[in-house]
Every structure is written in C-alpha cells, then in structure tokens.
Image 1 (cartoon, one colour):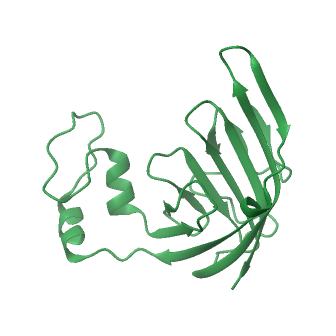
Image 2: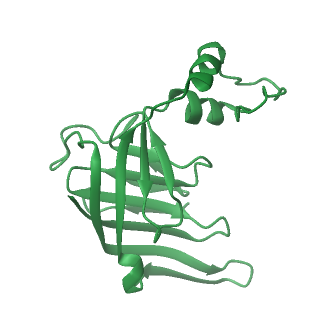
Length: 182
C-alpha cells in the first residue's frame, strides 16, 4: 500500500486517493483559512512521485525536479453559476447509487453519482492555468477540489496548496507550493 505523509502531517495519501478530513482540512491546521474567491499566482516548491514501468519492476520513488515552465501556474477560484437548464434539471435529479445507468436527458451530462455531484451539487470551481494536467476542478468548499474523473485532487489554503494526481498509467505525483492573490 502506498502511503505518503506530507510534512504537515494533516494529509495522508493512500493508494492514490486523498484524505483530508471529511470535506477538507480541519480549521485547526496552521495557515488554513477560508480562501477568498479570485485569481492567484502559484509556484510549486516540492514535487514527489512514484513512476516507471511496473511490468518490469523498474520504479522510481522520490523527489522530482519539474521543468521551469511547469513550476508556475495561475488559478482562479469562482462560485459556480448554473444556467436555467441545469438548475431545472438538477432540482429534479437524484443520486443513482446502486442503480443502473439510465438514459440522460438531451444535453445533460448526468449519468452517475459523480456526474450528479460534479454538475448539480459542487459549489465552487477551480480553474488551473495551462501548465497543469487538468484545467477544471470542483469542490463543496473553497479548500478541497476534485476533477471530474476523481483522479486528481487539489487542497488549497490561503497561501499554500497540495496537488495530488496520477497519469492513469500507474504513476503518482504530489506537488506542494505557495499561492498569492493577484
């Protein structure tokens, strides 16, 4: 089992899935505060990962030096505004746990519980700049975000971040850094 303990001790990443309390870091973590909406300039300070060819047993684990153009990025945190079609659709939608997928109404992307959460329940959107592997992530609060496929998570404090991702080929990465309001 992969288990990495980050320096603050508040986050435990196990088997590529992030755990940070129920819906984000608890408020007693030093430096954690509700993040204001807006634009931020960010820099990656540390990156660690596990990568390589699992089939032949050639795996590398440790620090990774990112290319300069991958170390800086921008992000924008906004409240999600749904158009009237989504508002009407989501008002009648219900989670589909343990039920087979059924036909989705025309133009509506909802076909699973993840779709239901992503399109109908998440309150905030995090838009990452072009140097990151994903561009849009959503969250229930302003500190913990997931992409639509749940392969990536972004934990955001007022002046720090932790970005966990995998590349769907068995390689896992964690980036830690700082953000400043623009």
